[in-house]
Length: 175
Image (cartoon, rainbow, N blue to C red; front, side, top):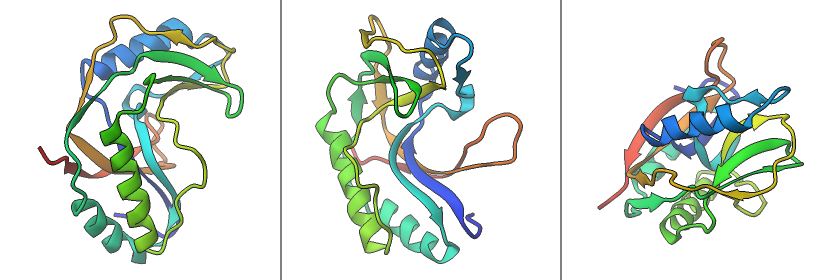
């Protein structure tokens, strides 16, 4: 699955109607010169691992399979932009406890696999576009609720001319 130095991350991957609503947000707000994320690449990162040597992969797969977090509903109720990094994003107004529990379990597991989690505050968001104009934070009205029932391990930096990310493995959340 992973080759030498492959860039990996754990994420939530939306399905319709959430993915369709995210694409509609892109079309509405990601004006030129913004670079919209490919519709198949829209995701919410849980933990970015960076370049991972192949010998770490078995531990990562075992660790992820052992995580016990209940399914939850994610409400993407805000849209805005950050200057650094220069991105247009959609995210929740507040981080649901099960989401934070999942992120913390992954970060703990990364340490157990000999990897170092990112050392910054977790800000759950879906990147809609890069290098766009500033957008004041706004409330999203009528955005579909996202029933989160699984998380994935994905790789970035693919050579495809379409999407950049590839889902390598999925795990269901415990109900």
